[in-house]
Image (cartoon, rainbow, N blue to C red; front, side, top):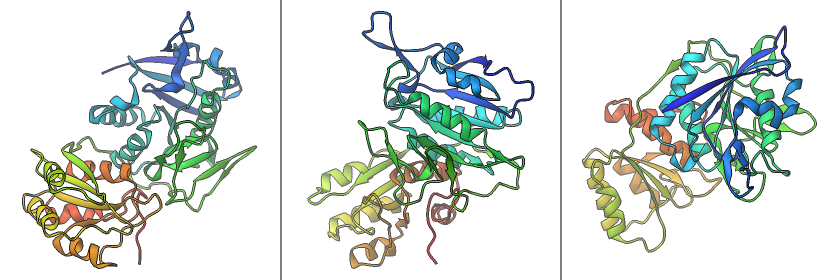
Length: 357
């Protein structure tokens, strides 16, 4: 996996207000039409000022690291996530903030996992992308890029305003591990229905400081171990024993995100409960989250979830699927005992879930 580095001269500031590392992994935001105007191809980031001349107004020192070659976000995997975390770790002391340009399809997964890999983060890591390529007339790429850079460089009394992993898109700044992609044709592609936006962007950027994580007091700690032997099983009425068995008995399976109904409810068929029980006896960790976009798991509220709690299924509270999958990868990667693993899954590590008193 190779990156090439480009130093960008924005306004050639003598006294820059901030230094930002821009990491381009791929995606629509970095695409332009070829000479025949028939295909989309990645553009040369050394010419980003020509594509986005508004950047000349920034009083920042900007460096671009571009994945060579860029990849479609559908191909993002564990090795890319670990590499992103390593890049931020190596460059952490040199820059005031980081902007990651990423395809929209899996951006919420990448933002979620980066939040777990980067413990005690005290600088902004802002993901953004676009629905329309930067080379098109009605693109949203310029606005998203400019605003993400502005947020990443925003400080108050020498301290960053948003010291956490976020997604900025269209008009909202969202906590990365609370976001989900909900649109493929409109500019408001992301939503965080279970947690309010960290900022609204109009004429001004209005930050919601009460919801932004406080500045970490401990040094940055970067993790690099993720367990990829996990699966997602979305329940539906009429699901067959063969389907459930095929997933739960997958070779090497270590963890399962179980998408249940409503507040964590599932069928009480004896065959279903027996398959879950057998999987857990083999050491598979099962994390229960709600299929509802704004739902929350409360195991035991109804009889159809009481069975799950009693057999040891972990309640995932109000985590998104993206956060649940990547948190399961992260926690299992720590190689803890079963009790420690379950406890950590139910602990609010990076603002990804709401703890009820």
